[in-house]
Image (cartoon, rainbow, N blue to C red):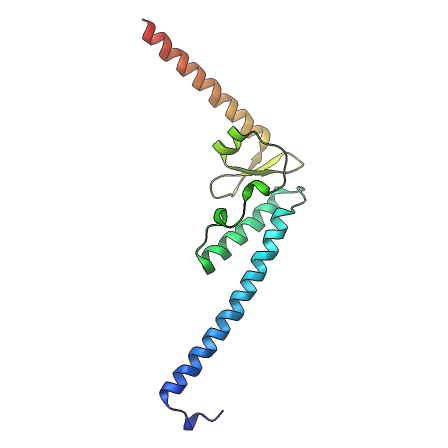
Length: 143
């Protein structure tokens, strides 16, 4: 293309057109990667929860940076495979999944890893403390 015969309005239009083309191409690459990650997450083999964490964190960044979308609004976390976790524990600790070795991915940011047994032990202690506190409150009211 010969630029000496092109005025500034045409140059701006050409530059804008190129920028839009580049953006669309990059967006398609991101969309393809998000789609791939969704498949990896929803068909995770349950071997190592660190692998699941890696996929979720990458998808979280792509969705936020490119589309301003929270991962929770994009993918149904309940459909991620893993061992059964009681609803009360799942809600309290935000458990995403537990692998075959008993290691859990949990937390609001979906970035914490611990043995599921530690989570259930903590839950039991909390529950016992609540029962004791409730009993102490009842005893205090009776006096």
